[in-house]
Image (cartoon, rainbow, N blue to C red; front, side, top):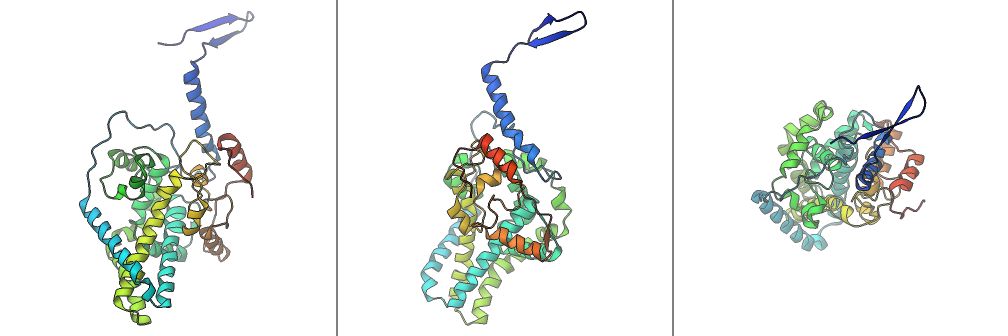
Length: 357
């Protein structure tokens, strides 16, 4: 039923309309929603909005769908982790070059995900020339966490519908689910529905991304498993067993779990200095191992910042890497949120834990 309007005569030529005030509950909801969407106008990357949080989306009322286990994934993941555990027992017997090689593969893999899959292709926070794009696509293939098109699509859905059933690794479903469980069950129907509605034309238009998608399986076999095993075995006489279980299985499992910790730990533990209305948290210790990816409250507040952090190089090797690429002309158009916008957002929605520095 429409709210009745009361008219009060002011003069012969004008009237004013007074609307009955909405209920306090409705007014509070409107104010909260307005506060949550204010950051939309701060986007310094207007060409893409598909990763901007949509606070208007809510889960449908009703029981969650029954879990459908993907037994192939469960068995393969269990075998992979068992292989990595065996690799731990072999570490003391490895040659020093094998340790260095495994660490190098780790850093390259993480950069493929942080500088490539995440900051370049998922969020378009900067632009890269062909040599850098080629390196990052190869590095992300070594990381073996789905092809670039699928990873970026799921990550954009995660940002746009975070902490709902449309979020592929919804942290509201518990630590195990958002860490690895989401890979062991069928996707929630809402994930497929919302993912199918996103505009992914920028990814489809990039030939390198689609080429990787077309040849992903043989590329992964080569970059994630064959090459990391053969190099130490052939180049400095490491045993095949140490090469396989340490440089390949153990290194790969560490890369996987470090990446998954962003979905679990960085959404459950830490401070929210930039926006207390979202679950993403700041976790400096985790950021050290992830080369700068765990300043997560900042990142979800400002997903269009190439640094994913207010502090650039501080515990953020990926930002240092991108800046180096920019210095030699391979990266350009780096997006950075102005300090005034950051401080205004902290004052508006922060949890009070912010410390400048």
